[in-house]
Image (cartoon, rainbow, N blue to C red; front, side):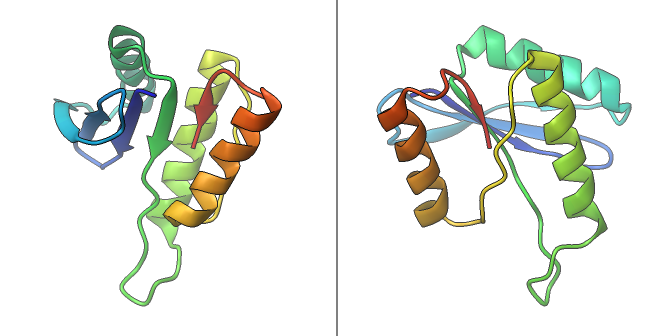
Length: 117
């Protein structure tokens, strides 16, 4: 599965993609834009160009492990990207165990062909 990871920032947004075998992730670009609609458009263009099947938006934590304002911004960005694609968004707890369980659930039930995490 081709997974596109999005690291949303105030001035720029980093992008990385893993190979189909999910062994190696590599940087694929930086979106040097702060205007959210342009960021969403650029993420969508990269996802389509790369054939992304899963899109993951990073959720930053505060130093004490709590979720702060930036985490809320990232969640809102993910929701807007999902709306742009016309897909549902599934909120999943942070951690490979929880994400893996959700992906397995979707794959087992053939619930979705595209997941935004």
